[in-house]
Length: 84
Image 1: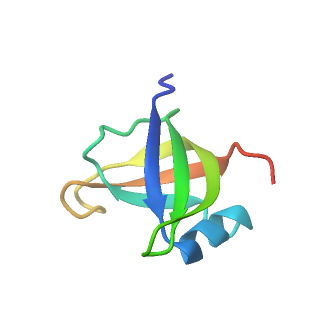
Image 2 (image 1 turned 45 degrees about the vertical axis):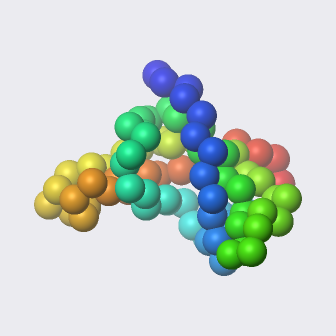
Image 3 (image 1 turned 90 degrees about the vertical axis):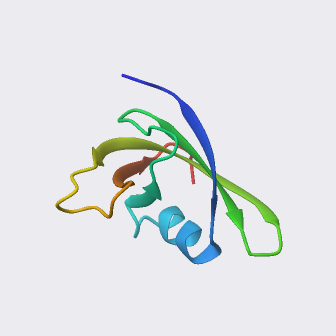
């Protein structure tokens, strides 16, 4: 299983939803060839700059079926790797 790391910007409201366990998926344009097992290093960005908060999550499932995803996009199921 791949363990490629991807550093990504994420808006505060989505970052917080991941931290508190409400959001267990991430939708992204697949310009990085995301795969199951990859680590996403999510860096909170408030539109003016990075806030300094980060969260590492692992991709546990990847959906790239064009019947369900906009062309070029994937939906990734994620689980927290960073301790709260």
